[in-house]
Length: 115
Length: 146
Image (spheres, rainbow over the protein chains, first blue to last red):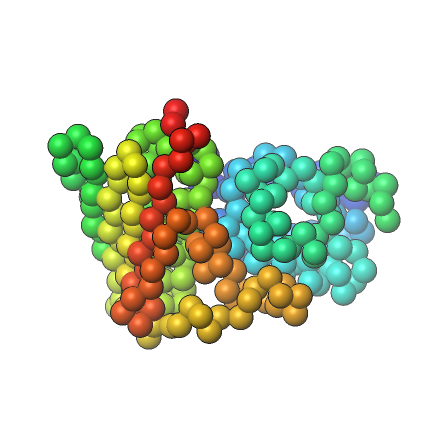
């Protein structure tokens, strides 16, 4: 398992913000994750894609951060899109039925192509 | 923190204050020992998740971050199973009364998801002392052997 730390790499494209999450989205980083995603939402109300390819762990606190941001973005008509969650993280999303809130795609290109 | 018993069993008891930094330190230490006992990635993920949920609930909802209150973490780790007990000093709760976090109307609410994940990922889960004490066990599966 990876150590409990979360890295966010932000890539600003013309039509979207792509945020790559690396490491663990757990109790210690959930608040920072939510704050950062909300900042990015305020700075650019366009599309936002979260690339979860390198996210090794997520807990209810990390999920809560994503849900809080998603609730706001859904009201704005620009829901967060998730890309490539790895099997353990995907299983958590499915078990909690949060797949009902978050559209999931196989690639960033596929996510951006879907408006 | 840890005491070896005949080379088979690793047991420990630690008392931490109600803050997330202390919780993370315990979590990392326990998970190092779990990995050292040869548990596979799936079991490590499950144990790490359940321990984090238990610690978060104890600190956040149980002790409400009260610096005067502690959380006790007890564990014993063998090659066959991992047993963890987390006890807080809060008012307790009845896990049966939590709303179903997977119901459509609750998906956007923050309540109950942690308890649900503990139940889903651990093999045995028992609450006692009015909900202040949580005991959970994860058994090694054949596929976990590394």
